[in-house]
Length: 57
Image 1 (cartoon, one colour):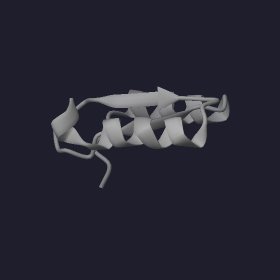
Image 2 (spheres, rainbow, N blue to C red):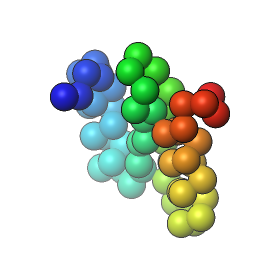
Image 3 (cartoon, rainbow, N blue to C red):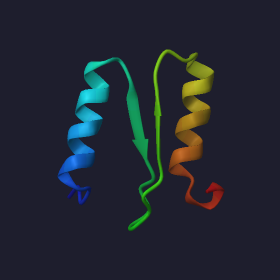
Image 4 (cartoon, one colour):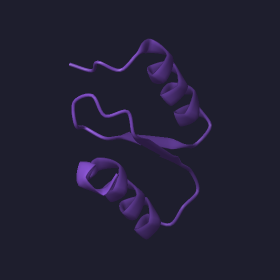
């Protein structure tokens, strides 16, 4: 179940409508997120790795 605050979910939805993607750390309680748009597939993979690897932030 998604425990993120409604304001974050709304912000993520608006970003998606404007062509951006938001990736959040899946670690419970971690508030780190990365938002990106118009990047190469390699850069998108790198940003996703950074956001989802809790040991890197």
